[in-house]
Image (cartoon, rainbow, N blue to C red; front, side, top):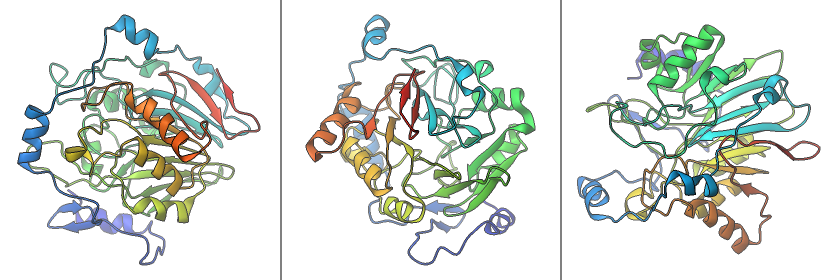
Length: 356
């Protein structure tokens, strides 16, 4: 729950955004989406999704997956020094990335566990393993958490990262999540609402900004939307990075592009979208992901939120292929929005783009 003390404390970070920059709605201890593009989940829709919709995911055995979705072994020594030019990115899986630029190294929504569920005994199990362990990671400055769903906020990963890095690691979380983090033993926390900025490092001139997205939150039986959902901008002196988190399509992206674009690199969800009748408000499909890419003025984007957990019913390789088809349909540069392998390290936006 976002206490009045917490809300008043975070208000000190707000810049004067004006009426054109949409704020979340907070009433009776719960957040709500402010856009007409949102609609609440109904019991009928949930029942139809779980019991009456046929899955077309068709995830094969591990031998076939090694061919179609290979997990690369990364050379993490590449992260020992921030690139002189460009943004270095490694996809860990789902919405988890390791990102480095302008002297800062950070993680997005880290999940290293086998399952994204309240228990490791049941729930959705990953069908592609992470390319490294937490103990293999380089020095990391901060973590960006988009919201509290189990596939984005993993207790075991939070605990292990906190055990390894302690107070040296700063956690950026959406409004309402600070208490949960404290209960996990984490103390170095910055809690923000949309359009609030925090200077992460004055010497490096790097700031972290919470920005809108369209989603919802729930982690327990009766805690619906007591925590906000957010996307994140990391603004450095040379480059800008955008992490969309988990989202349906909404007008907020054009506002983000206007205020903070263009972005050198963005990570945008492209999976977990079928059936649209149920998932459209909360998850973009590949065509809408390209819309987000254009709205925020992203120079290059990488598709995330696919190829790791079976959370919906589209064919498991469809997100990757659909993004390619959408770019071709629109006459866009096929390299402007790409997918990468788990563990693949890519440098984008530099003097030359390199892959290893």
